Amino acid sequence: MDKLRVDSGIKNIEVNDNGDYISVPIRDTVFYQKFADIIRKFENKQDDIDRRYAELAEKHKDKPEEDIEALSDSIDLYVTLCKEICDDLDGLFGEGCCRKVFVGIQNPGVDLIGDFLDQITPLLNQYIEEQNQKINFKYNRNRKGARSKRK
Image (cartoon, rainbow, N blue to C red; front, side, top):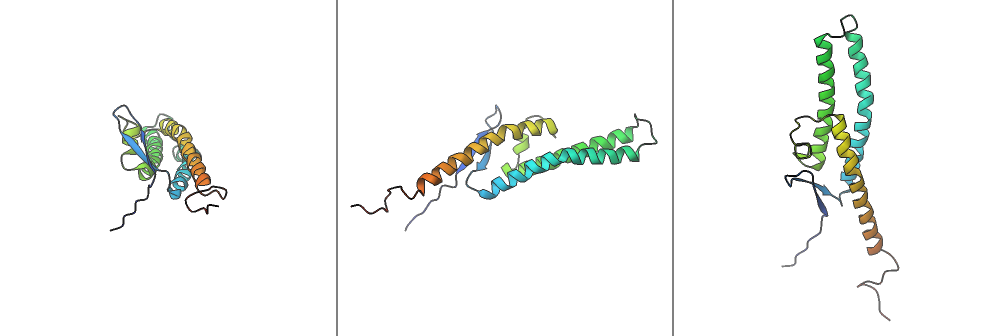
């Protein structure tokens, strides 16, 4: 029986002192597309938070600033928006990504999520560059490989 194996190019990145890791399918073009979508979504969250906070401020304008309902609504909004981003990260990097990356944190805030994105982005860019170099070398017209005719 003939066999064929294709290297799917999964990179594992250690994310904590416990040795846990997340997996990056570096040859999956959809992965990079989804990552870019998460970055855009994360960047747009601040606008969403500002807009929705203004709505809450309008809703509670006749109440004192210390009103617990206004505070609770603001916190709920912030938690919900951060949870959405974590769900997206778990969907992209695998279930448990945020639990592994943010050890001991139930629902990380914008600052922690931003720190993760700031650290992972250069690694992903490095993987893209390495893949481009391999492809350029492998499929270069001037390359003399096994299928070239010898003279």
